[in-house]
Amino acid sequence: MRISHLRQRLYDLGAKPCHEDRLLRGWSQVCSYDRKGSPAETFFPLALRNELPGIEAELDGLARLKSEHPDTLTLPLSQGERELNRHSDNEKVARLLIELHDGQMVESVLLPRGGLCVSTQVGCAVGCVFCMSGRDGLLRQLGSAEIVAQVVLARKRRAVSKVVFMGMGEPAHNLDNVLEAIELLGTQGNIGHKNLVLSTVGDLRVFERLMEGLTHKPSPQPSGGTTDHSTRPSENNGQVAGHPACGRGGNRERQSSIAAVKPALALSLHTTDEVLRTRLLPQAPRIPVEELVERAEIYARATGYPVQYQWTLIEGVNDSDAELARIVQLLKGKYAIMNFIPFNEVDGLTYRRPSGERIAAMAYALNGQGIYSRVRDSAGQEIEGACGQLRARAAKTRESASNIRGQILQRA
Image (cartoon, rainbow, N blue to C red; front, side):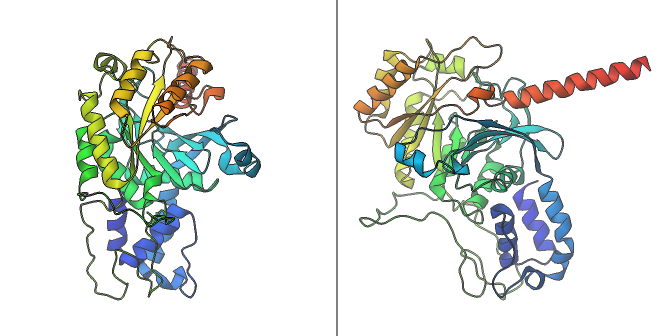
C-alpha cells in the first residue's frame, strides 16, 4: 500500500485535509484521533467513520511482529548517560522480524536513544558481498505505508524519535515509496527532519531528488537557539500547517511535487578504492568516490546536516593505513561523520572484523585529523542477526516445514 493511495481513499470518503491529517497523525504516532472539544466521532465525515474500522484493520495488517530478538549490545554511552538511562527501554537493542501482509518478511531494529532502523525492500539488488540481505536478490518493493507501518509497530513498543533507512534494501531503488514515507514521518509522524536518515550506496537519482527545492544553505540560528525541523499542527480552527482549514472549500489541494521534508544523508562508502568497491558492492552505480563525496557535501551544506559515511570494517580488506590516508584526503574539511561498523559474521562468509585495538586506532587516527569518527556496533551480533540473517533463517525454516508437509502428503 502507498500512502498516496490511502490519501486518495480518504478523499473519496469525503475527508478534507484536516481529517486526513488527524487520521495519519493518529496512525503514525499511535495516538488517539480525539482532540479537546473535537472528538473523532463528530469530527470525521460519516462515510469515513463507517469505513474507519476496515481502514484500521488494513493498516494493522501491513506489518505484524513475527519474533523479537533482544541484544544486550548498545551504542557507547558515558557513565552519566548509563546511569540516567539504566531503566530506560529506549536504550535497549532488539532486532524485529516482521511479517508483511503477503507473508514476506523484513527486519527492523530498535536502537538506543529512541532510534529505529527500517527496511525498504524485501531483499536487495545491490548484492553487497558482506551482507545477507541481497543473497536472494530483490524479491519486491515495500510500499510507503509498509515502511511507515514498521515505525508504527515499533512505537507500540516504545517511543521512536529517529528513523534510519538502513535495513534491508537499497532506498535508491525504491525512491518514490521511501520519500513518501519520509514526508509523512517528518510531518504527521512528528519526527525531526535531521532524525530521518536516508542511506544509499550512491545513486544520482538520490542526489537529484533530494536537492530539489534546495538552492542555498539555511540561515544560521541565533546563538543558543535550536532548529525544530518537525511540522506541528496549528491550534487555530483545526487548521494544520501546509493545509487549509476544514471549512474552506471542497476541493482538495494537491501537495507540491517537491518534498518539504529533507532527510539527513548516509552514504555507504566502505572503501576509497574504486576496484575494491566494485568487488564489495557489485551492483552499485559506477560513480567515482570523489564525485559521491562532492555531491554529498553539497547536500550537507544545503541542509545543514552532516553526511554520515558508513564503513563496514573487514579485517585485511578495508582496514589498512592506506585507506585511512585516502579517507583523510577525501573528507578533511568536509561536513562529515565517519561511522565505522565492525563486520558482523555471516554464515558462509570467511570475512572477519578487525581487532578491537585496530578499530579503536582507526577512529582515533581520523579524529586526530579533524574528521569526527565513531564506532557503531552492528545490532544483532550476539544473536547472529546481522541484517537479513533472521529473515533467511525464518525462510529456511518455513521451506523445511513445507517440504516435510509435502512428503507426508505424498506418503498418505
